[in-house]
Amino acid sequence: MHPRDLESFRLSTPEREIASLDNREWTKPKRRRHPFLKGPISLAWLCKAAQLPGKFPLVVGLALYHLAGLRKSQDELVLSSKRLEPFGVKRRTTYDALAKLEEAGLVSVLRRPGCCPRVTILDVEEERP
Image (cartoon, rainbow, N blue to C red; front, side, top):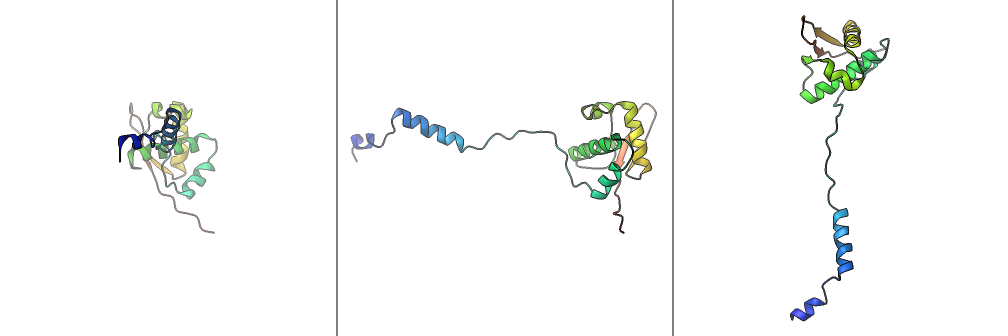
């Protein structure tokens, strides 16, 4: 084939721009990393936490599951005030919420003077009627 014959197949400038736009539409969008809540979260655990008085035991419980998802473990999560700040939970509220979660048998807490509490999320058996 002669080079002049190939010219007939070349796209004109506006067609070239449209073709490049079409290609951009089909490229994969960049994946953005956002904070997440990783499961599975036992529905029995969630229901029991939701029934505790006040909203903060549930909020602290969900924050614990968030931290567990980041660490890929539910054992001994260090619960600092800084980690609960995005959830709107203050230090004193954290202590009260942890006490309620512990009393309900949803978590176990290791408390030491001058240290952040170390929390383990416990499994909850489903109550059968």
